[in-house]
Structures are given as structure tokens and as C-alpha cells.
Length: 171
Length: 171
Length: 171
Image (tube, rainbow over the protein chains, first blue to last red):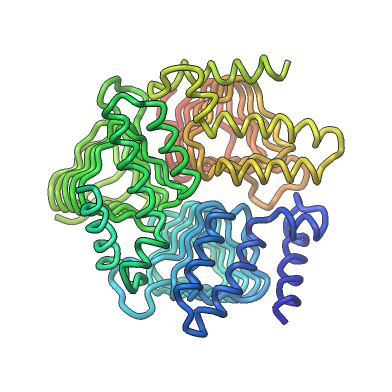
């Protein structure tokens, strides 16, 4: 099951990245794929109350890939993390299927919330490099978030947002 | 003395981060704590004219944590560096007590200054993720700097600034 | 030839960085120098159709330095990469001579182009920290790009641009 999901993740990278000529490139060379291996293990341990070990694996994954995903984060299928350096994904973040996240993106908190502190991305969301999505907000299906945007409020389905703070530029 | 300060640093992380359940998490899992160990050693060597060794330790710390603090930087007590990847703190930067700095923050120079080239943060300053503070400017007590801001001028006490370039939004 | 170029690269760092007291600092302590060694090897292999090995060396360089340069990128002489963490330079990017690039800069794509997907920088371009230059655009000679700018269109010679999206502020 996990192997099938990871195969799907790797195939997805090959399909989406013009610089990735075959699936072995994705498996061997993409930190955005390696961190998914670390995360699936860490998330399993986290759900089985082995929280310290889960965090340890997550931090070791950060050392190897430059990508930090808290073991508690819930990640859907076929997530494509491109380049990935500097990404931070918080404990209560949730990512749907078929999303694409570029390097230096944050799915973080604002410090004001207690239980759900981090954002939820629905399906097929694209987050451009450097964008910061902060707080327990909801980003709709098929949303595109421009590079370097700061998103602090819910975003409806099928729109493109850009800016600091972000505004809708295309429906 | 140094041990006491480091203990205080670790305890401070536990107190401030809702994802950090106890002090051993802070000591073992937080790159933002590890870099303070590297920095205290590097800063000591720097002050004793062992500048090459100091830089070497600082760069080794960068390799381990993704956080780059020049050995010359003066850092106060209970600095909380959260996540930390991509942080750059320059040689003549100065940070007061009880500050919080998120990942991808720069305390850098503009290339126009010769002696004091980097900013000074007073006490209890919060710098949001991705913010860049550039030049030998002074950031007042209890200031909050929004995520992704670019700060190029002095900021008075007790205000919140955001934007590129940053403007005061709350007193 | 390569040795001469690398010597020139190191000397250039010493000349430009006030925190770099001599050429051995540049050679031993600057990730922005180390990645040029990795890149020259990777680029040579890439041009000789050893693309997998080229990518492997590039990714190993990323692990050591935090800087990701695709082996296909064409880089001129005396490039000064300062700090460097989080830099991403795409496969079809081209950089002229005497450029300076700070940490967290992206020379990336927009997903809309097929062959030439990444930007070209002419000579003596300075790109401030966090700036993202996206698409197969041309940045003229002696251009300065402000920290955190997002550049999506061609920029003529001898100007300074800042902002998201970037605008000319000085001729």
C-alpha cells in the first residue's frame, strides 16, 4: 500500500517536471520525493503515539532534504514538492490530492490558534515558491497561489491569488 | 554560566512552542537550539581573535541546522529560533533578550555601510517568517514584524510593521 | 583553465565581501564557492550526455551547500553567491559575468514555457536576497534587483527594480 503510494508519488514527479526524464531520476534525485518516505514513516509513528521517534525521523529528513514536515501533518496522494529547500509544514496542516508545492513555502501558524493552527489545502492546489499560508484557513480546489504571496484568509475554489496579503486576480 | 544560559534557551522553546511537549524535545530536536550551542562557541572564539576557527564552527553549524549566524553577531538571552531554515544573521547584527525569529529571516546588510552593517533588535522583538531586515537600523522593544516584510528604516517601540517596504500598521 | 577560473571566483569573493579577510576563507568557508566547484563538474558531465551523474553531483552539492543549481545552467565568470541557502537555479538559466546573487534567490520557470524556461542575466547583475526571477526573461547589464522582488518581465540595462511584481525605481 505504502509502496504503491510512493510509486505513484515518483511517477507523478516524472509526469510533471520537464527536467525529470524518467522515474529513477525522481526516486534517486528528488528531495521532494525522499521527504515523502520520511514523512510516511514519521506520520505512522505519530499516529501510534511514538511522538518522539516520529519527530526524530522528521528532523533527520529535514537534515537530508532541507524540507521540514511535522509528523502530524496529513498529506494526500501525489504531492509534488519541487526543489523544496526551506519548506515548513506545521503539525495540523492538511494537504489534499494532486497538490504542487514549490521551495520555500510555509504552511504555518499565526500564534493565535490553539487546536487547528495550520492551513488546509483542498485538491489540485498549486503553491508558488516562497508563498506563506498562515493560520487554520481553507484553500479551495484548483487554487493557484502566486510566488511570494502571503495568504491569511480562506480562498474559494478555482481562483488564482497573489500579493501580500493575497488578493484574487483570476476566477 | 553557558550551561545555565543554554538550559534557559531550551526551557524557553518548550514554553513558547505548542508543538514542543517537553524540554528534551527542545534539546534534541530543535535546530534553533543547536545553532545557539554552535554560536556561543563560535562567538567566544571570535572574541578571542580565533576568527578562522570561529567561522569554521559557524559554517559547520549551518551545515547541521540550515541556520547561518556569523560568529561576530551578538545574541541576547532566550532567543527562540523556530524552524530556522534559511536564516542569515550578519557579523554586526545585535539581538536583545526574549526575541523570536522564524525561518528564512535575514538580518543583513545593504552594501552601503562600512563598520556597523547589520541591524539591532531590542528586546522581545518577533520577526515573522521570510522577513528581511537590512542595514544598520534599530528595531525597538516589543516590535512585531510581519511575515515577508522588508524593513529598511528604524522602527520605534511597541509597534507592528508589515509590507515591502514595511509600514506601521498597529501601535 | 578550470583551476584558473575557480581561483578567480575565490579572489572575487574576497574582494567583494567585507566579512571575508583572505582568499583561504573564501575557498574553505564559502558554500557559494563550493557549489561552483560542484557545478563546473556537473555542467561538464551534462554537456557530455552523462545527465544522471551530472544531476547526482548537483544534488550532492545541494546537500553540502543548500544551493541548488541544475547542471544545465550556464554560469559566467566571477559569480559571487553570498550565503546562498535556498537558492534554486533552473536548467535553462544563463548568468553572465560578474553577477552577485544572495541567498534564497530563484531563477525559475512559470510552467508555461517548453524549451527556454528560465531567465537570462546579462553581466554585472545584482539580485537581492529572496528575489524570484521567473520565466525565460532577459535581465540587462548592471541591473539591481531589490530584496524579495518578483520579476516576471524583461528588464533593460542599468536600472534598479523592486516590488511584487517588480517595477523600475531608478535609471
